Image 1: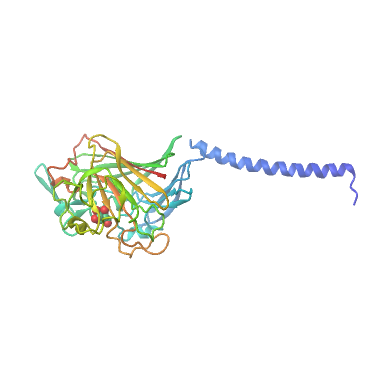
Image 2 (image 1 turned 60 degrees about the vertical axis):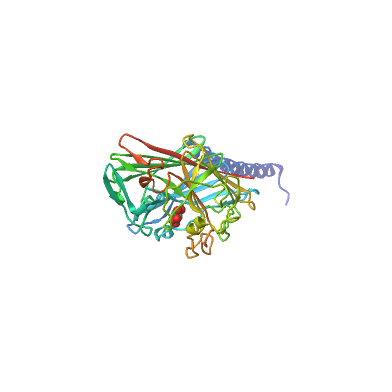
Length: 397
Ligand code: GLA
């Protein structure tokens, strides 16, 4: 078939036109996206996206917010309990994996969860006998941990729905969560306006900022209860993770895990983490405090009190190379090695969460402070503002 020169020219032109339109649409889409993201003032690189995570028995929808930074670090947070459900960070080979324990669906968090990834309040940790006194008036709280009160009671901040606001700027993305805890909720005095803001920046740091005000004198001690396993494999125990805690003393507990009021030196004890060591190195040693905690479940007294933000602890998983630093302005940190996990809870990747497959580093004021005269005060009066920040910074080494 001999085609005239002219028709050959037409065919060639047609092909060229076709190719041209193809490229144009591609770039258009890309720029649209860019356009879209930049209209929100975010570069394409860090962003927040939302999806429905489930419905409460009341029918109320719970939303999952995914914060992503320019390195591809991802943090998923739901407005139920302000729970971090997933946190993905790269290992030494750049492979991103989820390093926090939790559940794939809302149901998991509605059946009693061991506070996986939740915001804890109004008072993190234990209060002896569920009682405290302010200005001569005694307040009675729920006894939800044997004869003591734990983590804010039966319906603490880990089981309420928070109002969520997405905030972004050129350097970071934030999810601001607000909740009004009404006067005498769970037995605590005062209408407590609480805001917790999660901010993910491009240095792989997740900052948690806590703010609260009250119209009556009350007690406040908020914390974040993520369980970490830096290997990203939740079937593995965390005993080979190397932990450093910037503290020369810790707070011994009685048989019900209530502080005895003593400040005990860590030197010469299995509680000495002043230089990094494997969690499993001394966890099973014949130490009465370890026996009581069924492992580590104690509050360390951080160095450099009143010096504002400082390094509180580090965690390192030698195999994956993942490294986490915890910075805070809080006086204490509860190091808990997942001793109560008992293999009954379904794990995200299949299987179940066995004992010591996750650890927590809960920055906070000391446990039972309302009843301990030598502990820093946790009182919040009208006109005052409770404000504290903790950040979890991820890298590899
Ligand atoms: C804290 C407590 C532990 C345990 C967990 C949640 O870390 O210190 O004793 O109660 O919460 O299960």
